[in-house]
Image 1 (cartoon, rainbow, N blue to C red):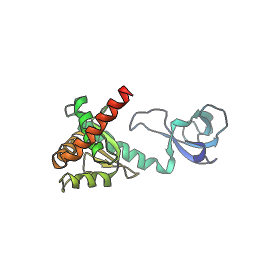
Image 2: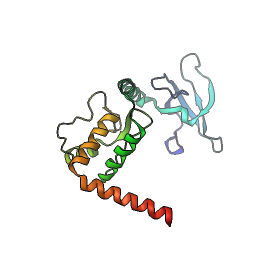
Image 3: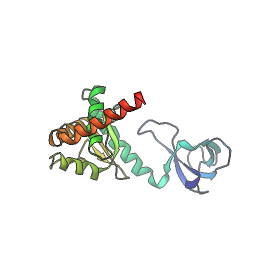
Image 4: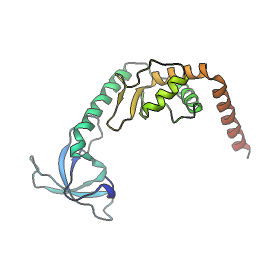
Length: 193
């Protein structure tokens, strides 16, 4: 929670754990003092801790309580995506890097996150545009195990992004070569400049 999001009396989901799918507790935000090192004062309105007031880390306030059901639905979808991608062989780092370079050559904001088997926070319209340019007309990016979250961002298995990069490179090889030549020139200039 940031100072701009703070309003005394708002109900928030308090979850100290960063584990996907972990439960949260409903709290009422009372005070966001200056100089408290990213902490705010909350009150527990119900349950075993009803009436207890305490200072908690702002980062532990995950969402407004009214948004919590949508967040947990997104996390359940992400857990299903994790399970689906854990069953596949991890991509080598060189494959992730090569696919990212090709996706960068599209001129769109696309990338492959190499530290997990899937990539989050992608724009569905961007993927559709690049898919069309790559000649992939029947791709359904939002279908399971991929999903579109409550903010309209897409999470997809990395294998699908690698397939997109391969198709784009085959369809627009000149675009990819030009991008790679420019990248190489910039690196050479930087190392000698």
